[in-house]
Length: 277
Length: 250
Image (cartoon, helix red, strand yellow):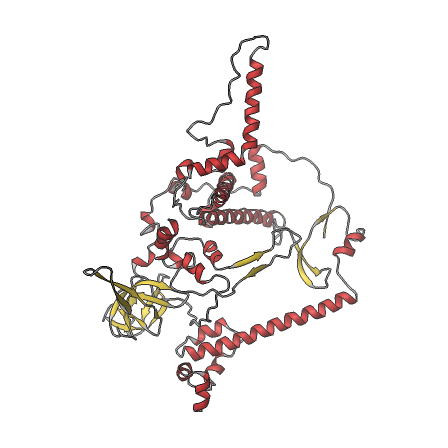
């Protein structure tokens, strides 16, 4: 793994290294007077020592202790309760720590992938993402509290949404955007994003509603089917929970009107059952 | 290799005590064949090769599970009794109600909540005798699944008899299992809380990547009448005195 990452480093960061080396050359040239005719060769750019660097671009890679490891153990993600008691500056610092960690993990995952190796403990990426989401949640919460105190009770720091008709004629909650011109003046925007109308839009809405209605109906039928089958297969099922899970299905009605004995039906195949009865 | 050793260790754990984040576990059962690029001009859609994952005794993050659910595999539909809260845990003492070990009591070693299965140590097992050489024989014992609540019942600790249970809240607000017959509280065994990383949360050994426990629990919050951005800008010495252009939101 050590050689693996080194190869990857050579491949991917070669351009950056060249820049660094060129600068080193130019500095050495300037320091030496041009008039001297000594035959001392120009000092070679410093080759990388055996101790790997961990600063600058190398921060995109994991610390060399973890190279080639099969398990890298870490704890859980930051929880909301833990972040809630932290000051703003702490959260600001923590965000960048998490951000750098995520970049490092994604880089290492890519390096492992290019070498066809298994990346140890992939769930670390999910843990970092989860803590970043939690942190963002807390920042939103604080901003919302400020807006409620200072502006109004309904105000939030979020972008406000509008319930309006979109260009296809559907009534929807949509995010609103910032514009230089008022709504009445910007006719071009209205023709593209404003509420749609006309024959095509009406036809589309009719078809869209029909399709949605059919989907809802088939979903309901599937629910009826599952409830009937569950009642047949599991005679001692919890009816209250089933009713709560499928509120649109009359569970008790189905339970009372099952038209055959459930155990018998399961044991005998369909053809044999019809022959017997 | 990794898959033969490390994942085998993970696979022994129940789903919710494996210490994996939910997001990671969910990712294993998505079966995405093709996904639209995450750009504005794409309607976000995912094409999956199966909608319903087929669960067996293997955990969803193991290679065996992924091989079982690979594209083109036809699996039967499984009917699982919906339960509000699954009530059998690792380390519980249960009585077998069906099969060749009917009436025997044992300790639960492995739970598959997706199928309402439990595996009881040494009971309902298949024994096979294998002969490697002329003299040496050895027996392998593989426990078979038992369905909850049909095949298995919890044992009431007060009289060592099988009972049904109900989940109830105590006066202190804890959710406990109460025996229907005697009203005795059946505590959840400590083994159920064991994870791959620690036996109990207090025994967890910090890795160098973890933040310190004192640092995490320290309260540094100070209430100020500012938004997050205003507070950070003040601390960094950023002053905003430009007058914004008049804009319209629609």
